[in-house]
Image (tube, rainbow, N blue to C red):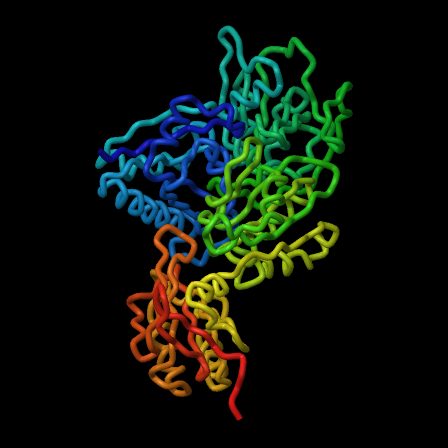
Length: 532
């Protein structure tokens, strides 16, 4: 029976996930989670220890957070359209009889994106909410002091309210929790000051996580405030010393910090859509980024060097499918994202390493072949990351793996071409196909097709036929090293685009490529010798 679960994950510490939430995460057919366009999802990172292999994942990426949008309906129009499309994706799974666990940091019905899915799906599908520990509770625990007692009133306020409205409400309540900070913090600080509550207010950043910080609200650097921070104004007078965090060292301060006055003018108010955070451990030392290739699929194709780097990492970063291939290790954080956010993923990895994390960025095959090494190295040229060490560890390429299954079709000069036109125009792809075909080299074809891109294989075949004979051998390798592996050889004229998808790699032979029958099936080689 299908069912939509709204799963509250708590404020960040995976150990604050409830027993019921952990069970449902492990049993669900589909795990769904949100993130901004950079692809980093705190929710998925919290849930990772409880997930199992083989689960479907739906990564719901916000089209806009704090940036501008050219959507005709503006910010609200873009967000409403996103929620409608996200609900349709989940409805498809539910209609197919699958159980869907939609992850929500904190509590699903407390300033959470789950509410938008609940509004669109709960009247059509069986739905159950699993409550979670809120960030307000976690922040209070971090302070070690009660929020309210007796008949005191607690008011929860979004920092996105105008400062004058925040001021009015702060004056009227006994205790307050102000959420949605980020770029709203200068206005929040002004409201605290204007209401006379600044001296009694505390700032808690990333409550319950390894990067938790506790400061006096007056001492916070406006430019460093993330979205996942909260300001607490306790009702009762604190009975014990507040465990303040040293702003520079990250260690507990034994004496209260002196208050600093002033602050930069308030920038534009951040939009209220949640953004995701890397979750890297805070440190004064610089860590490193290691970009690795896991190989094409089989566990035995991951090199010992790469396996050691994975075991030593504090954080694993990569496309969801590849991150799922890495064994889960206690205490190791996992940051899975969509396959279209390579630059953002690279920047996140470098940021975490700059803060002291040992980050491994994973790719399939070899990281330097149409994979993450280029994105990370390119981003690392930015001066802000020049001091972050970056290493690249090679892996078995998909081309080598497919070639090995048929013999040696890449035995002489060869080229590698990606048919994807996402990062380069098709005119460039076509020009390169013609050049390689006319040069009479075998070549491997990466990214030949996808669900949105299916015509390029036929176009490539026609371009090659202008220079190669119709009986030129073509190796079709799909999921090589995986559980559904298949490899066969056809002629160029017989190449059927319908057989090709994103998990397929093609090897197009040269005029010297030969196919012959042998024990176990056909063998293919491209001779290293040329005739006179």
